[in-house]
Amino acid sequence: MKMIELNQINKIYGTKLSKTTALSGITFSADQGEMITVTGPSGSGKSTFIKILGGILSPTSGSVKINGQDYESLSKKAQSNFRLNNISFVLQSYNLLPYLKVKDQFELANRVKEHNNITKSSFDGLIDELGLKDLLNHYPDELSGGQQQRVAIARAVYTNPKIILADEPTAALDGKRAIEVMEQFRKLAHDQNKLIILITHDDRLIKYADKNYQIVDGKGQFISVDEKSLV
Amino acid sequence: MFLSIKEMKKNKLRYGLIGSVIILIAYLIFVLTALANGLSSSNRQAIDTWNASNIVLNADANGSLTQSTLTNRQSKSIKAGKNRANITQLSANVQNLKKGDKTGVQILGINKQQYIYNDLNIVKGRKFKNAKEVVVDQNLINENHYHLGQLITMGNNSPKFKIVGVTKNAKLNVAPVIYGAENDIQAFKFGNNKIKNISAIVTKDKVTNVASGTQVLSINDFIQKLPGYSAQNNTFTFMIVFLLLITLFIIAIFLYVLTMQKIPFFAVMKIQGIANSYLIKNIISQAVIISVIGVAISGGLTLITALLMPAAVPMTFNMMLILGTALLLVVMAIIGSIIPMRTVTKIDPATVIGG
Image (cartoon, rainbow over all chains, first blue to last red; front, top):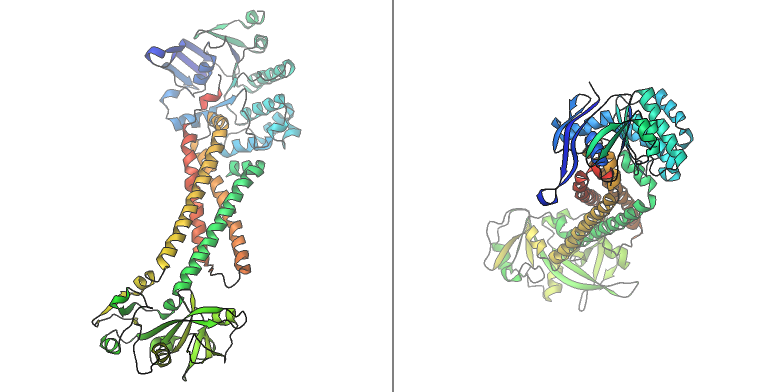
């Protein structure tokens, strides 16, 4: 059983005169322990793709199975609960609540999801690994962009999800910091058996992924990581 | 609660400002409530101490004690049970001995054989027994510097009356009451000790026979007809209700603006699977925390005001009334916090992904 299976997904925005096809006939699957980048030109449908993967947007047609569950058959409340237990997001911005110190970002996760978060020792290890130990008592506005993204990654991992979806997490970072973040994602996929799906517009980062899924004009296909990296 | 407390700790100035507005409004409401209560009480204190259920007045008096006269014949034909008492009312001025200015008083002649005299609560001295003796409200003693044993006159051609006792909670139409013997007050009022007219009869019982030319009012109706009483109470009620509504709008507008500013963060929390109910609980708890703290501080300020307020200001701080008003304020704040709720539930988590 694949962790995520999309079958013949179509997504059309608008009606009749203002109809826009964002995705057309997308069939996609991914396993745990994989890191997949999603690339494509602006307006190609990447964001729509990841929204459907994350269960926050319904396709016009086609089926979405996450961890074997037919996601669309769940109620809104059940979908929300399913996301809480299975999927984490790392976003380009607004990742952290500005009024919570770093340690409280994790405490919030504890309050909304009391069970099956990572253990204390795993958390300590994660904080060490991401270099966040000295930042726990800081507010987000006291951190650099790279530090904020590392906290966002730690928070995404904290709830122990099976899937982490990232939307251009390196967009606001310089080259060195972007590479650090990519390496962290890669470790999470390979060492902790998470499925990482990451949108990026930076082709240089594709080499950190196991697979690259390219979307052009709403149609997608896996292409060779090595091949793309050479472009 | 967690999110709301953390947010308020981080944004102290922002929440301090809204808290200050609530403190000031709550303080204003409490002081107005105390003033309304005090003025209302000053109008009716003496009546309340009579514990009467009905009053018989002249039918043409339009419910006014001042304008009512019952003849001796009328009063004798009225059957108002055992617990009835005659009232002979007269408005006059007494001289403030220290300041020299005059104070308006309500002089009430009561019968020594009837229940108002018997129930008269004397806090100092004794009840009047002999001719030209009076019992006065303690406010007259406190504010006008009279003392027991003193002789007072009440306007032109007034005989001298001797203060022999002090009673409390005896105000009528915001003026202190002077209780004297029915005969003395009738003689003073009519300038003739043969006229036995009275102003009204109050009774704790039912009035079973009404004399021609008289009317029976329930005590509550009579109080509502006291000059200016209803208009004054309605004015205060209007002001207090309006202030409560202002509180509702302030909280609602403030939380709405804050919610609009926080839409991306709510969306991020929703995308992570945090339920609407959790976010809504935090918005409500924020309103509750702000309003409870604001109301508590203004309650403290009100207590300080009560201690510092001169006795001449007719404010009565009734704890139950203040608590009730405080509770209403918190309820208004909660209602105000419901308005941004809809915005939160409508936030689409997908908006924070992509362009």
